[in-house]
Length: 250
Image (cartoon, rainbow, N blue to C red; front, top):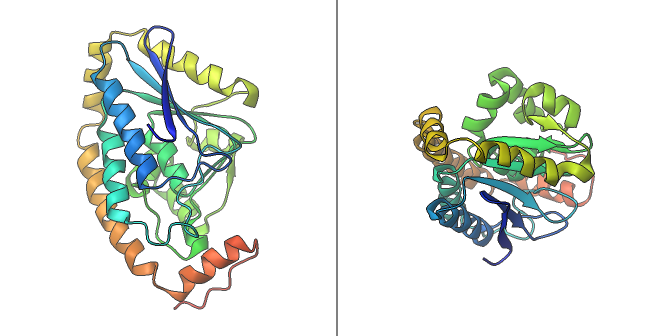
Protein backbone atom coordinates (compact mmCIF):
# COMPACT_ATOMS: atom_id res chain seq x y z
CA UNK A 1 0.00 0.00 0.00
CA UNK A 2 2.43 2.67 -1.17
CA UNK A 3 4.51 3.79 1.82
CA UNK A 4 2.46 1.73 4.29
CA UNK A 5 3.07 -1.94 5.04
CA UNK A 6 1.10 -4.36 7.19
CA UNK A 7 2.73 -7.50 8.56
CA UNK A 8 1.32 -10.24 10.74
CA UNK A 9 3.03 -10.69 14.08
CA UNK A 10 2.25 -13.86 15.98
CA UNK A 11 -1.31 -15.05 15.79
CA UNK A 12 -3.52 -11.97 16.05
CA UNK A 13 -1.45 -8.76 15.88
CA UNK A 14 -0.60 -6.72 12.78
CA UNK A 15 2.25 -4.22 12.66
CA UNK A 16 1.36 -1.35 10.31
CA UNK A 17 4.42 0.73 9.44
CA UNK A 18 4.89 4.11 7.76
CA UNK A 19 7.89 4.20 5.42
CA UNK A 20 8.78 7.83 4.83
CA UNK A 21 11.93 8.30 6.88
CA UNK A 22 13.31 10.26 8.56
CA UNK A 23 10.27 12.44 9.40
CA UNK A 24 7.37 10.37 8.04
CA UNK A 25 5.45 13.40 6.80
CA UNK A 26 1.94 12.44 5.78
CA UNK A 27 -0.22 13.56 2.88
CA UNK A 28 -3.56 12.47 1.44
CA UNK A 29 -2.03 9.41 -0.21
CA UNK A 30 -0.36 8.15 2.97
CA UNK A 31 -3.45 8.61 5.14
CA UNK A 32 -5.58 6.91 2.49
CA UNK A 33 -3.23 3.92 2.45
CA UNK A 34 -3.15 3.81 6.25
CA UNK A 35 -6.94 3.86 6.47
CA UNK A 36 -7.13 1.14 3.80
CA UNK A 37 -4.79 -1.01 5.90
CA UNK A 38 -6.83 -0.49 9.08
CA UNK A 39 -10.07 -1.34 7.30
CA UNK A 40 -8.67 -4.42 5.57
CA UNK A 41 -7.30 -5.72 8.87
CA UNK A 42 -10.65 -5.02 10.49
CA UNK A 43 -12.31 -7.28 7.92
CA UNK A 44 -9.79 -10.08 8.38
CA UNK A 45 -10.59 -13.22 10.35
CA UNK A 46 -7.33 -13.15 12.31
CA UNK A 47 -6.33 -9.61 13.33
CA UNK A 48 -7.45 -8.44 16.78
CA UNK A 49 -5.07 -5.53 17.46
CA UNK A 50 -2.79 -3.22 15.46
CA UNK A 51 0.60 -1.72 16.24
CA UNK A 52 1.21 1.57 14.42
CA UNK A 53 4.94 2.11 13.85
CA UNK A 54 7.17 4.12 11.56
CA UNK A 55 10.56 3.74 9.95
CA UNK A 56 13.25 6.25 10.74
CA UNK A 57 14.15 8.83 13.34
CA UNK A 58 10.68 10.26 14.02
CA UNK A 59 7.23 8.77 14.43
CA UNK A 60 5.56 11.46 12.33
CA UNK A 61 6.12 15.18 11.79
CA UNK A 62 2.64 15.79 10.37
CA UNK A 63 2.07 17.53 7.06
CA UNK A 64 5.06 19.08 5.30
CA UNK A 65 3.60 22.55 4.79
CA UNK A 66 6.56 23.70 2.73
CA UNK A 67 6.14 20.81 0.29
CA UNK A 68 2.36 20.46 0.32
CA UNK A 69 1.07 24.02 0.12
CA UNK A 70 -1.77 22.96 -2.19
CA UNK A 71 -2.83 19.89 -0.23
CA UNK A 72 -6.65 19.59 -0.04
CA UNK A 73 -7.24 19.65 3.72
CA UNK A 74 -10.83 18.41 3.51
CA UNK A 75 -9.79 15.33 1.54
CA UNK A 76 -6.88 14.71 3.89
CA UNK A 77 -9.15 14.83 6.91
CA UNK A 78 -11.70 12.57 5.25
CA UNK A 79 -9.14 9.79 5.55
CA UNK A 80 -8.42 10.81 9.15
CA UNK A 81 -12.09 10.15 9.96
CA UNK A 82 -11.65 6.65 8.53
CA UNK A 83 -8.81 6.00 10.98
CA UNK A 84 -11.04 6.86 13.93
CA UNK A 85 -13.88 4.77 12.51
CA UNK A 86 -11.80 1.62 12.04
CA UNK A 87 -12.87 -1.23 14.37
CA UNK A 88 -9.61 -2.54 15.86
CA UNK A 89 -7.64 -1.19 18.84
CA UNK A 90 -4.37 0.49 17.91
CA UNK A 91 -1.14 0.78 19.91
CA UNK A 92 1.23 3.45 18.60
CA UNK A 93 5.00 3.09 19.05
CA UNK A 94 6.19 6.70 19.19
CA UNK A 95 9.92 7.17 18.65
CA UNK A 96 11.50 10.58 18.18
CA UNK A 97 8.98 13.30 17.44
CA UNK A 98 5.21 13.24 17.13
CA UNK A 99 4.84 16.79 15.90
CA UNK A 100 1.79 18.76 14.77
CA UNK A 101 -0.49 16.46 12.81
CA UNK A 102 1.86 13.63 13.77
CA UNK A 103 0.79 14.15 17.36
CA UNK A 104 -2.79 14.05 16.12
CA UNK A 105 -2.05 10.75 14.40
CA UNK A 106 -0.55 9.36 17.61
CA UNK A 107 -3.63 10.44 19.56
CA UNK A 108 -5.89 8.67 17.07
CA UNK A 109 -4.49 5.43 18.50
CA UNK A 110 -6.02 3.86 21.60
CA UNK A 111 -2.65 3.65 23.38
CA UNK A 112 0.80 5.15 22.94
CA UNK A 113 4.17 3.82 24.04
CA UNK A 114 7.12 6.18 23.95
CA UNK A 115 10.75 6.48 25.00
CA UNK A 116 12.38 9.00 27.32
CA UNK A 117 13.73 10.93 24.33
CA UNK A 118 10.40 10.89 22.47
CA UNK A 119 8.72 14.25 22.23
CA UNK A 120 5.23 15.44 21.52
CA UNK A 121 4.29 18.89 20.22
CA UNK A 122 1.16 20.48 18.82
CA UNK A 123 3.19 23.33 17.36
CA UNK A 124 0.56 24.84 15.06
CA UNK A 125 0.46 28.20 16.87
CA UNK A 126 4.22 28.53 16.35
CA UNK A 127 3.44 28.36 12.62
CA UNK A 128 0.69 30.96 12.85
CA UNK A 129 -1.82 28.23 12.11
CA UNK A 130 -4.85 26.47 13.61
CA UNK A 131 -4.46 22.94 14.94
CA UNK A 132 -5.96 19.98 13.09
CA UNK A 133 -6.32 16.18 12.99
CA UNK A 134 -9.18 16.36 15.51
CA UNK A 135 -6.89 17.54 18.32
CA UNK A 136 -9.86 19.65 19.44
CA UNK A 137 -11.39 16.34 20.57
CA UNK A 138 -8.48 14.05 21.37
CA UNK A 139 -6.05 16.33 23.19
CA UNK A 140 -8.43 17.53 25.97
CA UNK A 141 -9.71 13.96 26.32
CA UNK A 142 -6.18 12.77 27.07
CA UNK A 143 -4.61 15.63 29.06
CA UNK A 144 -7.59 17.75 30.17
CA UNK A 145 -8.77 21.13 28.87
CA UNK A 146 -6.29 23.27 30.80
CA UNK A 147 -3.21 21.32 29.76
CA UNK A 148 -4.55 21.11 26.20
CA UNK A 149 -4.87 24.90 26.07
CA UNK A 150 -1.30 25.25 27.37
CA UNK A 151 0.09 22.91 24.74
CA UNK A 152 -1.93 24.45 21.88
CA UNK A 153 -1.30 28.10 22.78
CA UNK A 154 2.45 27.71 23.42
CA UNK A 155 3.26 24.95 20.93
CA UNK A 156 5.94 23.76 23.35
CA UNK A 157 7.59 20.36 23.14
CA UNK A 158 6.90 17.72 25.77
CA UNK A 159 9.53 15.05 26.41
CA UNK A 160 8.78 11.46 27.38
CA UNK A 161 8.60 11.77 31.20
CA UNK A 162 6.26 14.79 31.10
CA UNK A 163 4.26 13.15 28.32
CA UNK A 164 3.70 10.16 30.59
CA UNK A 165 2.66 12.40 33.49
CA UNK A 166 0.22 14.31 31.26
CA UNK A 167 -1.23 11.16 29.69
CA UNK A 168 0.09 11.77 26.18
CA UNK A 169 1.67 8.33 26.39
CA UNK A 170 0.75 5.28 28.45
CA UNK A 171 4.18 3.73 28.99
CA UNK A 172 7.83 4.75 28.74
CA UNK A 173 10.23 2.05 27.58
CA UNK A 174 13.84 2.04 26.34
CA UNK A 175 13.93 3.27 22.76
CA UNK A 176 15.53 0.08 21.46
CA UNK A 177 12.68 -1.94 23.00
CA UNK A 178 9.85 0.31 21.82
CA UNK A 179 8.48 -1.79 18.98
CA UNK A 180 8.81 -5.05 20.94
CA UNK A 181 7.00 -3.49 23.90
CA UNK A 182 4.23 -2.15 21.65
CA UNK A 183 3.76 -5.61 20.11
CA UNK A 184 3.62 -7.17 23.58
CA UNK A 185 0.99 -4.62 24.62
CA UNK A 186 -1.05 -5.39 21.51
CA UNK A 187 -0.72 -9.10 22.19
CA UNK A 188 -2.13 -8.59 25.69
CA UNK A 189 -5.18 -6.97 24.09
CA UNK A 190 -5.43 -9.69 21.45
CA UNK A 191 -5.49 -12.29 24.23
CA UNK A 192 -8.87 -11.04 25.40
CA UNK A 193 -12.13 -12.10 23.79
CA UNK A 194 -12.16 -10.40 20.37
CA UNK A 195 -15.93 -9.88 20.27
CA UNK A 196 -15.82 -8.43 23.77
CA UNK A 197 -12.94 -6.07 22.95
CA UNK A 198 -14.70 -4.75 19.85
CA UNK A 199 -17.93 -4.32 21.81
CA UNK A 200 -16.24 -2.55 24.73
CA UNK A 201 -14.25 -0.31 22.41
CA UNK A 202 -17.38 0.62 20.49
CA UNK A 203 -19.11 1.57 23.74
CA UNK A 204 -16.13 3.52 25.07
CA UNK A 205 -15.85 5.45 21.78
CA UNK A 206 -19.58 6.00 21.29
CA UNK A 207 -20.11 9.28 19.45
CA UNK A 208 -16.37 9.80 18.91
CA UNK A 209 -16.40 9.52 15.13
CA UNK A 210 -19.12 12.15 14.81
CA UNK A 211 -17.27 14.44 17.24
CA UNK A 212 -14.12 13.98 15.18
CA UNK A 213 -15.96 14.67 11.93
CA UNK A 214 -17.42 17.92 13.27
CA UNK A 215 -14.12 19.02 14.80
CA UNK A 216 -12.23 18.32 11.59
CA UNK A 217 -14.71 20.37 9.57
CA UNK A 218 -14.18 23.37 11.85
CA UNK A 219 -10.41 22.87 12.02
CA UNK A 220 -10.19 22.62 8.23
CA UNK A 221 -12.15 25.86 7.80
CA UNK A 222 -9.88 27.70 10.22
CA UNK A 223 -6.78 26.28 8.60
CA UNK A 224 -8.00 27.33 5.16
CA UNK A 225 -8.60 30.85 6.48
CA UNK A 226 -5.23 31.17 8.21
CA UNK A 227 -3.10 29.55 5.50
CA UNK A 228 -3.48 32.74 3.43
CA UNK A 229 -2.15 35.06 6.14
CA UNK A 230 1.26 36.70 6.40
CA UNK A 231 1.66 35.14 9.84
CA UNK A 232 1.42 31.62 8.42
CA UNK A 233 3.95 32.43 5.70
CA UNK A 234 6.28 33.80 8.38
CA UNK A 235 5.74 30.78 10.63
CA UNK A 236 6.66 28.31 7.88
CA UNK A 237 9.63 30.45 6.83
CA UNK A 238 10.91 30.71 10.40
CA UNK A 239 10.57 26.97 10.87
CA UNK A 240 12.61 26.27 7.73
CA UNK A 241 15.23 28.81 8.81
CA UNK A 242 15.27 27.43 12.37
CA UNK A 243 14.63 30.77 14.05
CA UNK A 244 11.98 32.36 16.21
CA UNK A 245 9.00 33.63 14.16
CA UNK A 246 8.27 37.35 14.00
CA UNK A 247 4.49 37.51 13.77
CA UNK A 248 2.78 40.76 12.77
CA UNK A 249 -0.81 39.65 13.42
CA UNK A 250 -1.83 39.90 9.78
